[in-house]
Amino acid sequence: MQFGKCPGQDTRYWTHDDIFEDYCPYCGEEMEFWKTDLRVKCRNCGKKVVNQRFNLSCAAWCSFAEECLGSAADNLKPESIRKKIEDRAKDILPAPEMEELKKETEKAIDEVKTEKVNMPVEIGSIYFNAIAGAKGEEKAWVVVEEMRETGELPPQIAEGIKENLKNKYEYTERS
Ligand SMILES: [Zn+2]
Image (cartoon, rainbow, N blue to C red; front, side, top):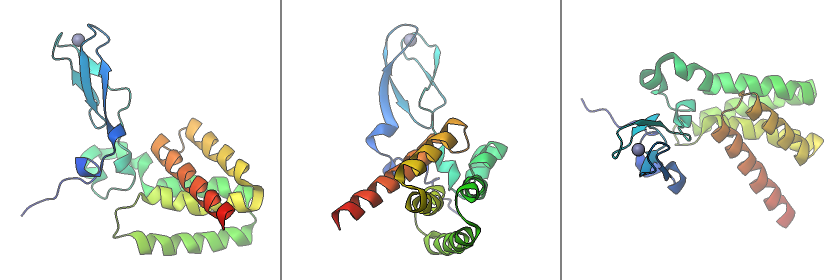
């Protein structure tokens, strides 16, 4: 039986930002960091250098996250992020709209289950688009930023939601 490689760790899905070069803080040797490496050993001085951009955002949507990361993956699960976003949104949006959004979210989850999408970004975009619609785009941005700062949203997910907001609003402006 053959297991596929974890898609989050699969470099075919990486962007150019996911591998980057930096200098060893101990000896100045140029080093290459991959986002999934927590520490990289410097080939010149042999010291282990912590990767400043270590990123396991794949765990947020990957069904193998638990096997990969154990309980560290708990906070990154789509359900847990969804709950945090819903908790924020319900303070901002009226109850009937929240009910609609919950239904919309369930539907979106069913639809995108089989695709390689970032589920928390998809879920977040539903709520933040609604917040932007009701309270303005700026309010939506502020709340995303707040949730990123408090650690409720992992940075890459917050960025993904903002990207979607930006695309939506650019699109709306043009039509
Ligand atoms: Zn070094």
